[in-house]
Length: 464
Image (cartoon, rainbow, N blue to C red; front, side, top):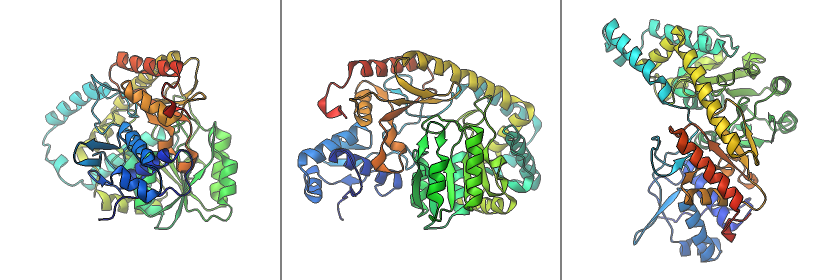
């Protein structure tokens, strides 16, 4: 079997970091499945015409980023993480109560929905036979669940009828189904220069060309989008205008109108990811309200109600919705009836609104802790967001800062994990504030990171 040889052409920065970036991308894309044995560092050094010290350093950085593991006497292997996980994020999704403090997972607080779930499950048992939830959905089930989706979208100002709504297994599934419906292999998909990492893996699996569009403080730059669309033949644009991942930016109404106009002019389909849209109590209307015939609007319950409630709602024109329905049938046939019914009940009886309000209060509380910890640093955040974006001071590299944080027991994600172009890795890190259930552990983790910033790089290899 041929050994793994990373593609370094077009990359910039130190050679060892180029190797690590290529390693991360090949793991996310599936080119290096979990358990794959990597070549000895000397063999890789010979293949790449670099020194063994360079490849050894790259492997050490890969271990620190939790991409690979070394086994004495056996070799180096790709860790068993999921294909859509962020490079460097821990493989275990459970909430930690001890050990490393995890600020790498962008998940909401899970416990807020537990009492409501207990009441709903008890009500379902009282109401009669449960066999329907283990069978295929009936037309009346689908209509009831679709109507709940319409009500959920109405909160964002999205109007829809039953022909335009598709229920999915969460927003990520909705994104995949939208891409399957509106693109074909070889099509060009535009995204924000820093984007939701699984979209990169989806594009690779669907054989799509991916091109980044410049970001500024407000999100996706309209002028850059206009310039890129001239003659490029892009089929679709994926973007997150509200609480953008990872930068936290929320686009203003004027920018949204400009992007809608550009989409109309260049016949571009917009895939608008609004998974965080319900969290800010006051935000601009989605771009999809401006160009409903060429927009696919995607949201879900997971960021507001509970991360395990994998129910997404997609709104598209009737013709596009039909194609998205087909993609749902192809990938899972249907969302789990019990899960969708719970979400639908909560939307109808007001539980969803109460849980969303509680999630906002939780997020605002966590953001206040973070503001106090990083009062003297370059931080971007939204008062109701679940994460923040920390630009590192001169002297630090993002990879080096993440490695030092890992060594001190705090898991974070460096900005390069979100970069579409690996040659434009931002010198920043994303910190997630809601995955840790214990507020004291969150405060401890933030204090540790603040101390690292104050101490400065102690290891010359971590300096930018």
